[in-house]
Image (cartoon, rainbow, N blue to C red; front, side, top):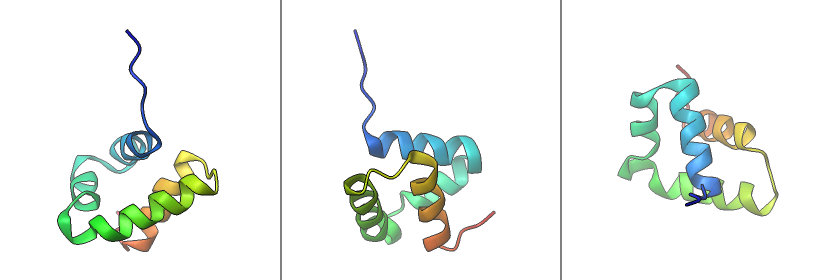
Length: 65
């Protein structure tokens, strides 16, 4: 059985691995949901890579650890 990760899942996995569980929780919080959705949609349409998108989300939310 093959499990396919969506672009969004891969970005969230990258954030979890690079920045930790607490930062991922902040990114996925209701307060940031609309901003994160817009960034993910824009990056996916531009075929940005996962690391660039994850770092863009962190920077746009000004949550640099």
